[in-house]
Image 1 (tube, helix red, strand yellow):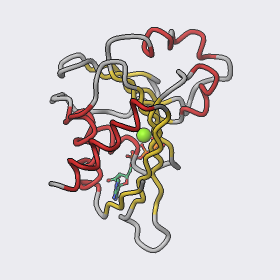
Image 2: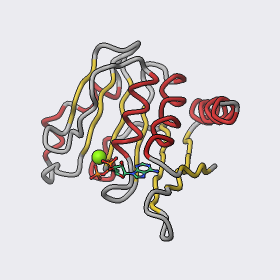
Image 3: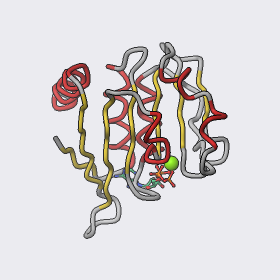
Image 4: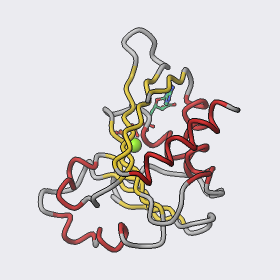
Length: 157
Ligand SMILES: Nc1ncnc2c1ncn2[C@@H]1O[C@H](COP(=O)(O)OP(=O)(O)OP(=O)(O)O)[C@@H](O)[C@H]1O
Ligand SMILES: [Mg+2]
């Protein structure tokens, strides 16, 4: 299922609805080109989790942790991961932990991903610079239910 947003603020608002519905252990993979809006969407997730600190892109640190919301948020960006470098990151502990994991550029840690997750693809519009197509692909029944809840809540806003 796909939602179109026309501003960064609208993408944050959609992320916030998702953030409200997330539970410990949930894994969200954000796909899309540079500048598609993955970090922007994560700002919304953080808002939905009640995190008030500013969300900064983890491009250089690879992982940023936010402990002050309803649940911990682990925000990862694997774009600059050196090949083979993921062994040092202790990813399993994040995926099996009590927080929410959001991953940008997850294709670089493909073999370490859990069996189920929610993939969200963000795509820029060819016609309008500020438009994004945001497509949800749930893997597993838990994430199928989650997407249904999020869409129902989003369309009632
Ligand atoms: N509808 C929209 N949704 C999201 N971002 C938008 C939208 N319109 C404009 N923007 C702008 O596009 C940029 C998206 O940048 P962002 O850092 O979120 O991308 P990213 O996918 O995380 O990129 P990277 O792969 O470099 O980490 C921001 O400057 C944001 O303000
Ligand atoms: Mg980013």
